[in-house]
Length: 260
Image (cartoon, rainbow, N blue to C red; front, side, top):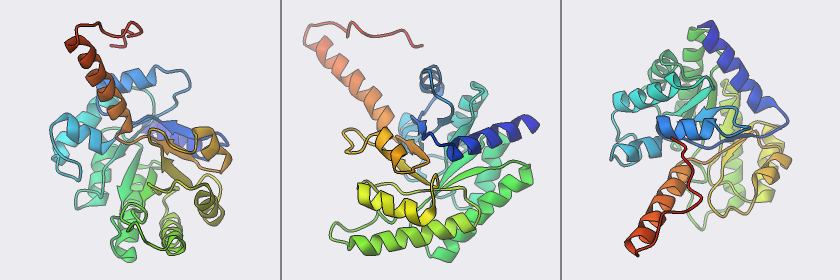
């Protein structure tokens, strides 16, 4: 457990450092090995969507928790890097799910609020943090709010920002070290959220063709950027494109590297 506590402490420090933490999400052992081997990679994070897809399940806690945890356990056992698990909304019991994740060596996690009543969402955050305390580690909860994910296309942006900031502050006060706001992408809105929550408290996701680069996000005071299912989609796009070339009578890409 001392080793796990050290990993958790180091993972938390990566979120607090001036340099943004970049997490290219992984979904199995071989993807984790490929990412971990890249110079500059300092931690790993799983993507629940990608793990579910690997086993043929749709996203949204459709994959059985035992199966989900078994894949995460395989990844943890194969690396010395700190690892964060996306456990969605906690599978009905966020505290217990966090406890089980910590038991297999996970030191951080994503937890969705799914826009549940704020008191209920805060209680879930507290349950996860208590699981970390009980295990004697500084669990790095990336408390996610779905304000922007579930927003209508014509929603008032000022109201959305107010909502997101209110929830973010509540999650920080409940003990989460960072708050995750997927689909927050506009420079001015990111700047406003960072000003309200503090430097290195906000985490975001990047996507193919994003307007803001990782360097841009770092300059805005963002703590961490991840990729969610997009890294798996990059890999699958490469696979599909290579297959197109073969079916057309050509060859595999000449720049293919033996990464496994």
